[in-house]
Length: 121
Image 1: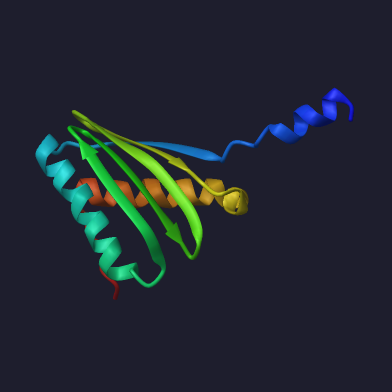
Image 2: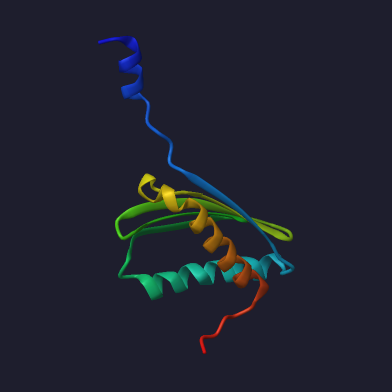
């Protein structure tokens, strides 16, 4: 087998990633509390679609992973004074929707950290 072919077999494609930074004016404690409550609420509201949920916090950094309809997602949330950074890895199967996924995450994070609640009318 040619060396070029062998080398291409051994390399795995990295998962697509997203990065979102959200600015806020909350205290560190309030921002963290809202983020942790959101994760709990997602488990409650979408438990039938989510599986293999893990969440681990060390100081101001949270690591999470879960499967949504069987597709594995993972990421890190870093809390800083005035900002929250979200770094996520997406399955290749949804990479075409990366831009939309990033927009939705940013929109929902802004709502969460600004304290605005949307109501259906």
